[in-house]
Image (tube, rainbow, N blue to C red; front, side, top):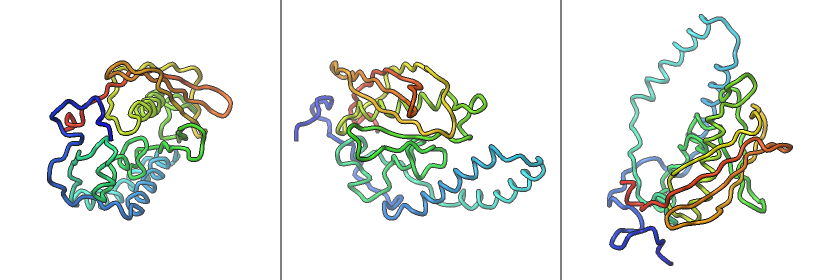
Length: 227
């Protein structure tokens, strides 16, 4: 296997701390993902429900014991070993992949919409539905979430087959208001590569219109920098 050119001589291809603590198990993830799904639904209900403030206050008090119970449990220890390499830590050590807690694609993160990769298509593309919790102007998604989706897709495209990249610049054009509760599809391409810089572009669209597009420069990074 050819060593990626962005790794400097003398540095390991992946960051390996030599210690692999017992963190989340990769099998199964059903309970964690189901918990995130329910919390995602609760967030949606809190944002859209139309009841007296006193009723919401009583619901908040009912949630406090659950919050306290979770607060007393062990935390996940950060582990960067294998991050952004072909042998991702989540696969090598049987752990929950870091990306399952990602704020955009993480099924174990109640804050994610989530953004999902579409399978069995001619090109890599992702789909997302922004619910009411992601609204800005009435009936429309907040532009920050639109940019975040484009950034994520560009980052994945720039990373290729395991090359670590970070966002250098991101330029987003908002062509139409982004509707809530509507299926959106995003796809991206690598336009050219100059040294460590990967120039990419991406489009976000409904089944009828292009909603936004973006151009970005992504910088290939030595995995050891994640330490």
